[in-house]
Length: 190
Image 1 (tube, rainbow, N blue to C red):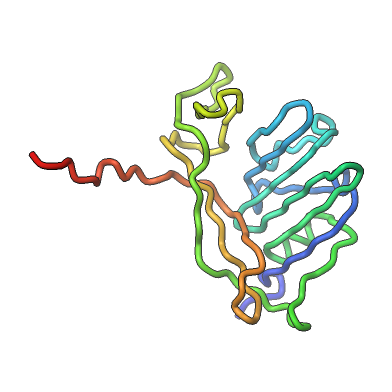
Image 2: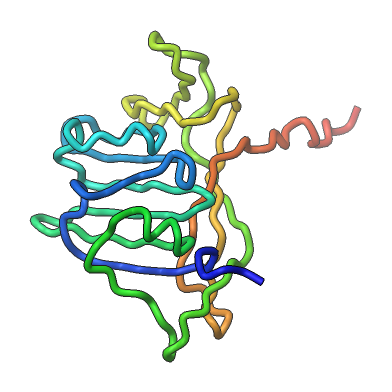
């Protein structure tokens, strides 16, 4: 039996929530933040700094506790959260509207899906961060927040299904190594 704190919820809202936002490295450790000044940066949710990021265009915090997307559209800020009810409560979000389907709030995890992220691991930069280089967008400072060097990185998400078993959202929850399939390929006629 699951408690109400483990219940999967989907909320959305509008309003400038950056100042009250309380991100947790424990429940949503990954953070992607796009600002007008610094572009896209990857890091840990515990490193979230409103003062440095006053001109946030997009913010994506995610992990096994939940997935929060925030985007600025001209003078308005829109947000969406999918994840555990307890994590939503801890974020201090306000003015959210809970998703329901025909009056039912039941949501559940579906299949796991993944996408390959940009870049190939190139070693550490001058600050000691693991660094990836993307040859199509060489200017992008790719520093994925993973502890071990990985040649390629995947981002994983669960499908979130409503009571009718239809996909209503995707819950991004981790970064992981992409398996190197080249070692398993046949070498041709020899």
